[in-house]
Length: 169
Image 1 (cartoon, helix red, strand yellow):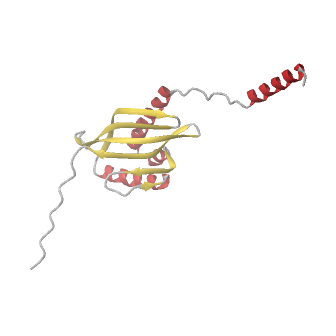
Image 2 (image 1 turned 135 degrees about the vertical axis):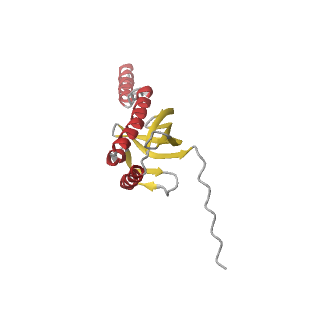
Image 3 (image 1 turned 60 degrees about the vertical axis):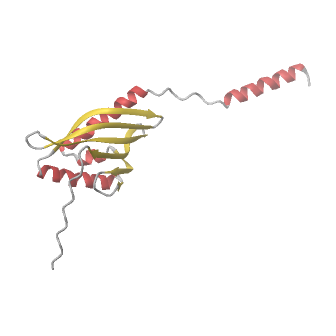
């Protein structure tokens, strides 16, 4: 092969190789992602205060898992919407409301994010009757951050068990 042919072959190989490389993915704006997760947490509490349980459920992925205290885990947006509707009805009848506390942590890695924070349950007079913490895991789906796992717990110990009555003699 002539020198010209080798140079042409080398040039063709370089062009082919350069066409096979992929562009670097856009840089992730972690600060913006964390801010969005914090805004979604605030939105959850706002929707709860308004009684918009469908709006709350729409913050969750279709296959999300909700692990609320004292109840079996709930899987799926429809089950989560039903749970929140029932809980909200009970809260309203008891004169209770849940207030957002502070975000205590947030993180993002790729399309997965998490957020932690605290809350307070108040009665009709505004007195705190409970407080606790939450942790939510989110996944970016179609450009939107959706809850995929959600759980919370009370800071207070559970109520003591009611003693069983003695069997009749």
